Length: 467
Image (cartoon, rainbow, N blue to C red; front, side, top):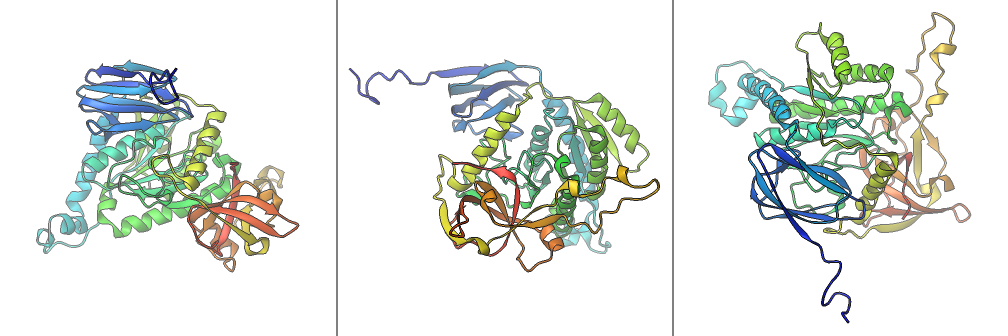
């Protein structure tokens, strides 16, 4: 008889080895409660453009992923996968060609930007020349859902970083967070490598404790739900604030300005709303390169829409064959996992969340103004324009039992600020409302760090988390 953990262990994992030829990839899926260990034994391989280190063991869970090699490699892996296969049909050559085209635009901007030249080459190189600023490409990646937009954005960002650039990556898809929690849109400068093990969020949030790669410090705005159409007016408002923050950043950072921006847009579902949203993104972020992924009609529609504009380019790239569609239940499971990691850390880097009990009156909570409050233009008399300029984007809500289990965004705003200023405030962090006792007028709040509950404004969205 064998004691558990000794002798013959029936649950020991089988080590598998596979060899990939040049320009091929290994695709695999891992369940939410399973872990797969992967190690590169020989050659070169990458995930979303980030090269994997030889001999290092990478752990993956709750993912649908592919490992690509340009020259060939040998992979060792162990664990339980939902499915795995190799393929020599990949869109990576198309993505690499797009990267080199963008890099050419960056090189052209670097050659004429005097601030960049002074910093990288030396002041002597620009003596006698008038100050001149140039900007790298501002790239918008759009397409239907499950077309691989985020994967392409990661690849282009990683390749630009390899070239010594510092592109500003922007995520406008609230259901897929970047360096933050679901329900947010964010931007960050990527001058160093990404965390390939965090495949669903670009990289770990800097607020979740120690990291084994250089942290990125994003600017984050809270929208509060998965789809922009839930409240398109509020979504456009926070997106506009994010664009202003990005503009302020590249105005003082010549390297980021030369490197340009890479924008991962939300999936286009409704053509009428979607095209209007694209126009807004193009205007807010001064987009000059639109990349459509895996949709011929979308490409032709946008080509007609922007063909007459100067300095505007619309290109198309194929959809990656490794893209896998996910259902709503899988997305919710991933989001719940991200909430848990924010407060309790990851298996490699666990955190001790802190619970504090406060008076209900000490917490100021706002939520988005319901879109249904706005009058529909179809109900107005003919010739009457609908004006929502003075409609408040948020409304104050009473701290009650309805907040229990909700995730609240802690804003850089105080209760004395105007509603307009509060609606335009970025995110400081997040808290979780564990319990609300209306009888005792007390609220139990979970925070990722040990501290007093900040006397800031909290913004409520549609997300809840139950431990």
